[in-house]
Image (cartoon, rainbow, N blue to C red; front, top):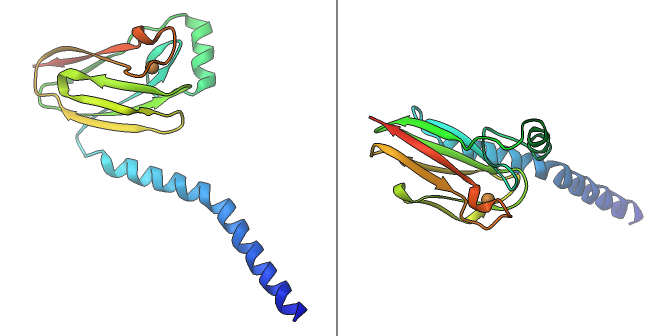
Length: 156
Ligand SMILES: [Cu+2]
């Protein structure tokens, strides 16, 4: 009887360890696969990282890097994303600190439920008109919230 109980304990412990260790890997793999699936071939892809001090930064930037870049270079330029008319544009939106939002109203693109740190939100749209369009953050994220903007330039 005691032996069986020990065996069950061991099985349960193994199961628990497997779950605790395996879950983060599982989530990571799932995220990567899902992200991968969402980006069609031939799309113009950009990554924007939101930072409460520096606004939108082009590329994937982690909190520590954002901070050191801030001290090294001061305020960064607002990003300008250039695409051609007719392009399918895919934006990977990330945050290096707090919850940000995203809005590009000329193309009907809104992220209303927030861009959480550590999670990437992917939006896509067809750049079907020529011009320069402003995108911004639509979640109040700090003192520099109103400066958290960038430009999408669609050329003919
Ligand atoms: Cu923001």
